[in-house]
Image (cartoon, rainbow, N blue to C red; front, side):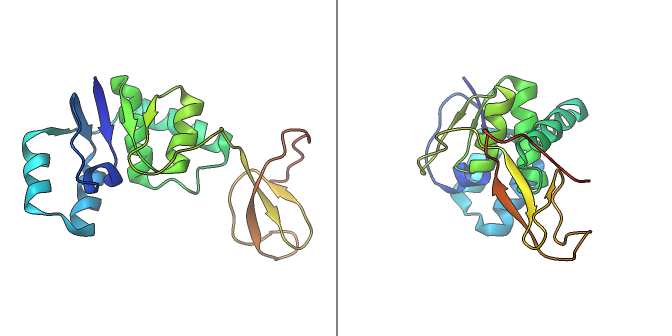
Length: 163
């Protein structure tokens, strides 16, 4: 079984079987967060580090825009999803946004420590002042200047949005 590991999987200290992969961004993140000699040995001997295709990165971005997770995914998260798509692999992560987008893309995932998501969620962005909804994340409403917050989309209501 092919598995793509995110930073939480690598830092968990758990042992995983199968073919193991990650991205250069995740390796940099792990080293920045505090790699150990044992983890360095695992990265050097058991985990292949690959860069995902541009096509898969674009597919991930499109899916993340569809779920509203685009602002929640780091470049490392996007790369993990794209690599899992390229390899037809299972992604190991506790990150809810990665799990949400993986579900949308049909990429299998396994949790590492946390419970994991129970359903796919679509996020929207709503102005706290005038109540307008936006497709893309923004900090400030271009209409009234109030703060824009992330809200869970209500599937029973039609999507009325501003650009």
